[in-house]
Length: 157
Image (cartoon, rainbow, N blue to C red; front, side, top):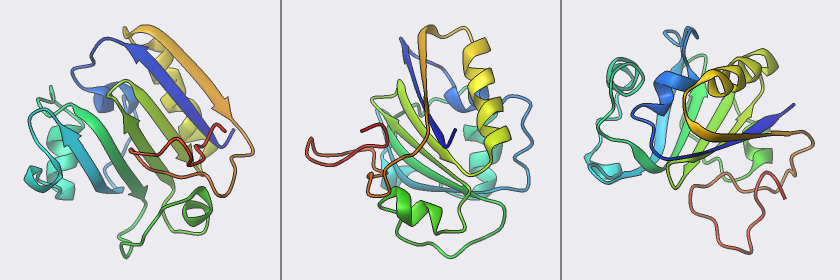
């Protein structure tokens, strides 16, 4: 399993708290590449690592992302352009999270145990009408973007 696509109905007050429950992310570097919500857009959001770990991931999140692209690494890495799955595989980032329409989440992850834990947390959640698709052999030219044109390949094409 190289990735998962998780879908659900309704709203989650904090999808990050659900997905990362009982996962120690204190030593991760988390970088928000893109964020759009009803309350904050990309330019308005505090993107500091401290804010992300102590607000976005822990408490009720007023800034529920409608669309987002978030990258995760184990150490501070130089920001690089990650457009495709191949870019991600060749990078120092270990996980990519794309949120589309707040209830469709695509995760690519190099750590299979972590991916299994995130999937388990999702399945055990109280979210409505949950669906999970496991992905293997993701196309290298698949676009890792919150906004894709219909002509661009996704991770599940």
